[in-house]
Length: 388
Ligand SMILES: Cc1ncc(COP(=O)(O)O)c(C=O)c1O
Picture 1: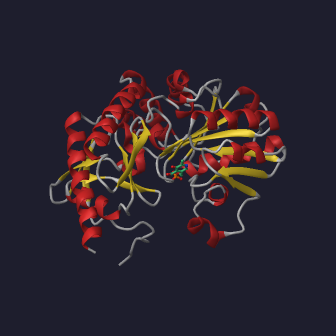
Picture 2: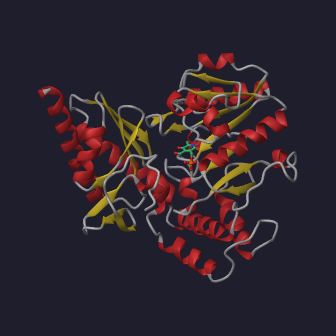
Picture 3: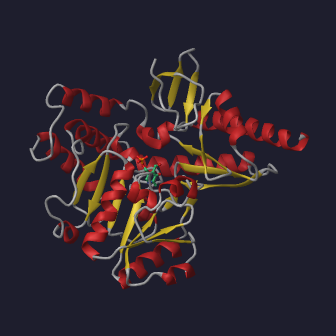
C-alpha cells in the first residue's frame, strides 16, 4: 500500500466537505475554518462564482499553454485591471507562491545585473532554491545550502538596519505583514525607507504579497497601506479563489526588459487557473472584499483583545484586516489543538503565535465561537504550565 510522505504533521482529521468559512469532517462535525488551507480559501471554500467559472471552463478548454490566446484570458485581464497593483499592467501566471517569488527574483537579477539579495529576519518566501535562499528559518534552509546567494538578512522593522543596503543589491524582498514569521505588520517608516533606499541604490523592491494580497489585509494589496509602490508584486493564495495559481505583476518598464525564455512554466496560466482568477477578481470587486476584511478584521481583533488580552499568557493581539495573530508567552501548540477540539481550525505562526487566516465571510457569531475556543485553549495552556 502506498503512503503519503508526511512532510506536514497530520492534524488527525479527515475533511470531506467545505463551504464558505466552514469545513466538515467524516464524522459530520462542523468546523470554523480559520486555517483555510494556509489562507488559500480567503474568498470562502468553493466560492459559487469561482466554481461556476471553473466548471464552465472545464466544458471548453482545460489544457493549453499561454502561447495560445483564449477568451477567458481576455476576460481575466479585463476583470483584474481595476485590481492590479498601482502602475503594474503586466501579469504572468504561475502555480504557487514560491514560483512567483522565484520569477520575481530572476527579474530583479536580470535587469539590475546584480547578484546580492536582501531579505529580513523571520521572513518566509517559499521552499524552492531561490525563495528558500531568502527565507530566514535556518531549519528550512541549512540542509540545502549552498543556495542562491549572496543573501543578507536584515532586522525587520528596523530602519537603521537598511543603511547596509548598497549599490550591489539586486532586490530587497519584503512581506508587508510577515505571515509565517508571526503575523508581524511592517511599520510605516520601515516600508517607506525600503522604498527610498532601493530607489536610491538602483535595487528592486519586491513585495511578497503571497499571503497578504488580494484583499486580506483590508486593501487589495497590503503595500497600499504604506503609500509606496514597489517594483514587483508577487501574489498567490487568495488570488485563485481556492485554485492553485500565483501571479507576478510588473510595470511597463520592467515588462519591456523581459524577453521570451526569461521564464517559463508548463502549467502556468492554464485556462482553469485563468478562469479561477477571473472569478476571484469579480468576487473581490462585487462583494467589496477588502472593505469587508478591514471592518471584520477590526471587529475580530477588538473582540480578541478585549476578551483575551488580559490573560497572563497573551503577549499581544496583532495583525492587519483578517490576517490576525495572538502572540502568546508560551508555545501555542496545545491551544491550537484545543481550538480544533472546539471545532475551530487555526494555525501556528513563528514560535509563539496562533494565526487566524479567516475567509472574508466570517460573521460576528463565528468570531465569538473563535474567541470562546481560543479562551479555552489559552486557559488549558496556562493550566498545564502552572501545574507542571
Ligand atoms: C509570504 C509568502 N511567500 C511565499 C510563500 C510560498 O507559497 P507556496 O507555499 O504557495 O509556494 C508563502 C506560503 O505560505 C508565503 O506566506
